[in-house]
Image (cartoon, rainbow, N blue to C red; front, side, top):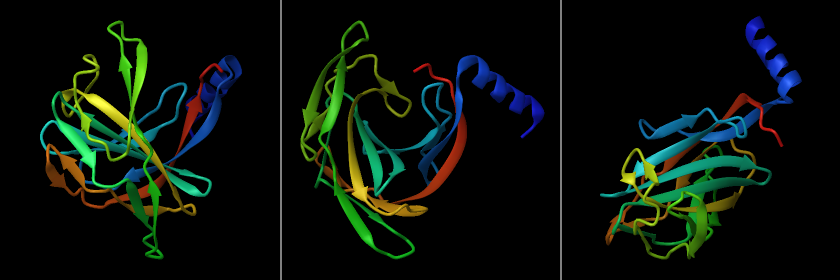
Length: 200
């Protein structure tokens, strides 16, 4: 590490009370759709995998190791009048070294509906296999792939040892009545040092 950077880190820690942390996450091995974030003063870097789901819908996935589990977060984003649902409520991961497969149950989907002032309002929840429909709940919410969307979020904890890599298999997605099978996605573990400067 060069001296100016080291001096900056030390100065930050002395003046602002920040600390050096290590972010531990999984990054998808895909030719496109992978976004690595640098984090912020209150959160560390991570990687997001985004993929299209037919016309007017997209999904995104984040994965992190946790003691005894791999935690998968999934978001399904829909333009107005587009629908999507999961064919079942299970996600599976395969350990490439042992070829063993484990699965976990997806939680209910949630969407936070913001008011016209941009402040959080009520939260709507849906069963894992319920049909999700975009209905312009959040006019100011947008993503690069689609523009304005409603985004539904869920998570799953899959029992596992600490894996260096795994293959993730999603359930079949039913988008506007059409079955879509997302190919298995390979994830590799990554660690990255960052400075946490958030005031607690």
